[in-house]
Length: 394
Image (cartoon, rainbow, N blue to C red):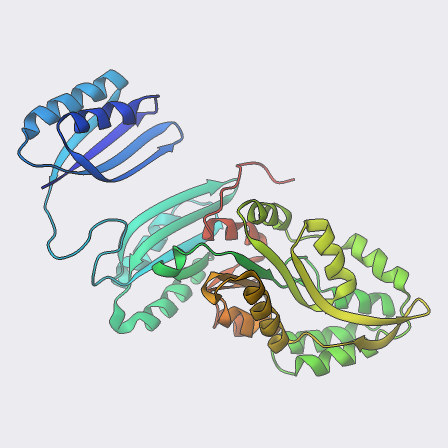
């Protein structure tokens, strides 16, 4: 048989020791436990197996142990489930997904999301909320019906985004994997700019280049052709201008903190960009990235020639580079995370175990596992389960 133990009250040292000591005394085997402290408030749930014991006596001793620590303790008899393993959301017949919602903290977010889930007939198995500065991350373990899974995922993304929130949906089995390689695009992803547009502004061809960039981002024209044409327009630009522009470029808010946390968590971090090595190489050094790839601008006599040297990194090449990195590091596709914002990132987003459309166009959102808005890059830490110190932004 099984019993549940619920403990709650002001957090103090020794609570777990006291409660578990009573269970051990009566030969009750703990098979599941979850405990957290919320703003100084202690909450713990325990499931324990037992045979031939006096539950009334156990309950009295648990209440006594609770009083000694100033907390409430309740004992509940649980009905045993037949024909399947219990615990942690892995029951037979369920189709479990992890839904992570990210947004600016405001009253009513939990109600809004749970209302959507209720209306779609989706059962919530577990909920975890983390508030960090002005950003809130809510993680739901949900059971999607297998019969219309794709439709439910699509509806979920649409409904949550309509609330002005970001959402990432991952199959539970993939969520549990230890993801080990993360790949970022550069322009408008890791840095808050389209570098080629800044170069064009300095060269006096801003409008021409901007139009080509926009069409390429939307997938309306071939990326290689658009890139060659844009670079041709930069002919004659002095190298000193590139150095000045790099000094002016700002990282996307939260990027430096996120990458630091990724590195501390054991991730290999790569920058794979359709931008230029002049900038990707410097970012690699500045942020301590493991890998950086970009297109190499040809330079002669200190000026751009209007040509690109070597292979051009387009959508297909990005995907190939990621496959090469994964093989080199011995990492499976399911353990790769890809983050990008435009059509040039589509293949890497589709092929990754977890694909995130960041501040992205519709063409990318449609194939991504989830979306993040421009100010929410740090929210990726919550999606990946990284531990970040709670601290104010610079």
